[in-house]
Amino acid sequence: MNLLIVIYIVIFSLLFSLVVLWLTTIGYIIKDKKREKQYLRLEQGIIESLAYSFIDDSIDKTENIKKLKAYIKDNDISFWDSVNVFMKVNRFIKFSNNENLKFIFNSLGLEKVLKEKITTNDWYVKAKAIWMTYEFGISDNTKLIIPYRNDDITLIRRESQIALVTFLGWKSLILLPYFTKTMSLWQQIRIIEKLHETEEKLDIYHFEKALKSENIIVKELLVRIIKSFKLHEYKYYVVKQLYSKNSNLIKVAVEALNELTPESIELKQIEKRLPNIQRELVRNYLHVS
Image (cartoon, rainbow, N blue to C red; front, side, top):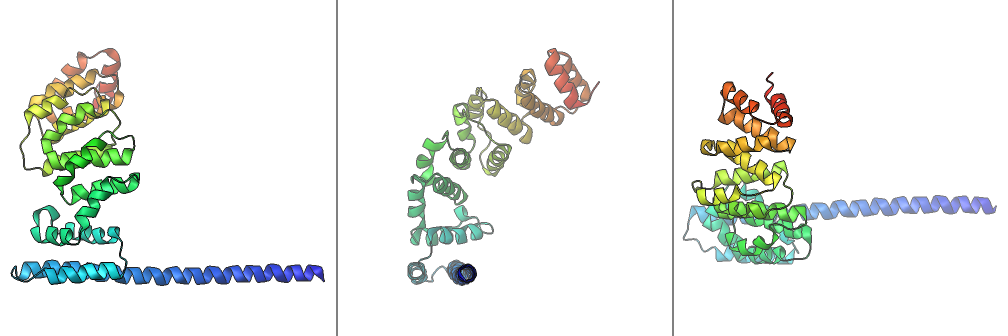
């Protein structure tokens, strides 16, 4: 009899747990659906405000802004949901080049909050805020970002360094000798992309200061920049890296020389002057006998 009671209790507990799980799941689904509707309505409101600005500059934007502010407040919409809408719009309309978009963003108080997020103690929030800052082209935050350029946390350091290149262009390269930590290939590619986006011409002074860096990863980046921008006058720097003891740097240098010096005879002549270990590596990368 006692055993039967225990079995009933176990079965009841399992059924109760399943019901609770089922109700909780339904609750989350309803909550997600509600949040999705709120987000879509916010998205529509921001896009409509922007559209009205394009249609007629004489239209009073403040009424739309008031409605958006009230909607965000009444529905407890998060800061991140709000800025994510602007990130979507930014894919089609460059935020930094559009005064109407910046006006809506600032009027909603999002720039002020973004600035506060950069100084937060939460490393993930800080990194995300820095990323959004350079994506939105808010150069006023540059001074806040500079102290994190060599941060111990990879994500913060990476986003800060990309941000500085975005805002300072070629001038940012003068900071490279002070970058003592590693840098991923993805980050190097992003930095080169940002340099291509800048309207400024190559700043020789700052670039040559960067060439003094002893960081192997920074040297890789510089070689890739020389390759990407076809800076033939700095081919000597690429050749110099062939004497490195770092096999990856040698490989990057060989790849660059293959583009800068397509003549195989010159490459073979360079190879012959190298020490034995480096010569073997270069030979393998060049596939020459």
